[in-house]
Image (cartoon, rainbow over the protein chains, first blue to last red):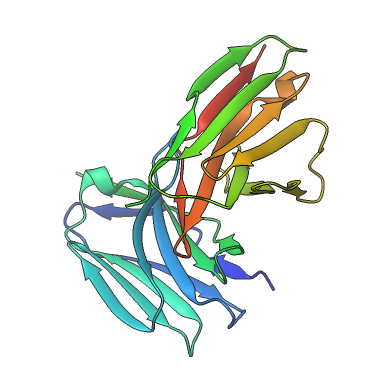
Length: 110
Length: 113
């Protein structure tokens, strides 16, 4: 079993839709949870991070963590064409060990 | 927030030459930096973990003599691709950890002719 599983996509949605991106993990030692957005030929950009179960909201983005189920999600409201990118979930353990999901490619169609 | 600067963003070199890529943490000290390689439409592949003042830890299958990593200060790590060949052409990305969160550089695209 891989350490992190992520919905592979690709995912295409119409502009204005709510997008749900999901990852599951197997190691309960992970304590830090991050979501990154990566545009083509660019480095990943940190969108959200959290280290507790529950929801964290920032503008149109909401990160959700359920440590008991080992499940994390990123919701994007009112999606825009500029949100078209690859989204990566990442988990950290102690500031030294990080693992990434394979990424979900999202296309928001105008 | 934490900022990581990576340079150059794009480099073209001839086969057999060496190329150095720099990764700097601009507003924080990074005892640990990470180097990744990414092929088109594929996920990040961790190459090595760079520790300030000590030797880098390479992932299995990554040639230490081909990809030289130096982390001489708390704000600078360098990756040198030695005797580059066309198969080394790729997108290289560095990152650094600050407060248990990873921040990435913008990446360096290497093309070896």
